[in-house]
Image (cartoon, rainbow, N blue to C red):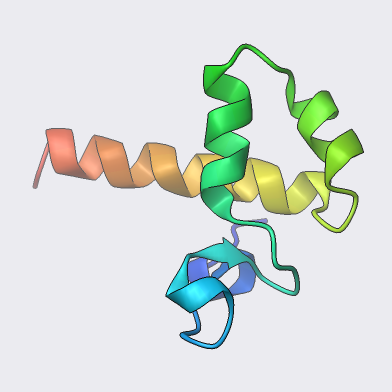
Length: 75
């Protein structure tokens, strides 16, 4: 099942100054990327941020991949 950006990521000026967060949480999406960049596993991230579901994290990564692919190879 494909997820849309609003169902996965939310940005609101009243939540962390508009930083993109996982919908329904106050966890910045960048935190997931920081964990992965540091060599931590997705499981470690999810253990530390239980308000983020595995589906949300995977969907965010899929969206990032899609956005980067479209940027690198525009139609």
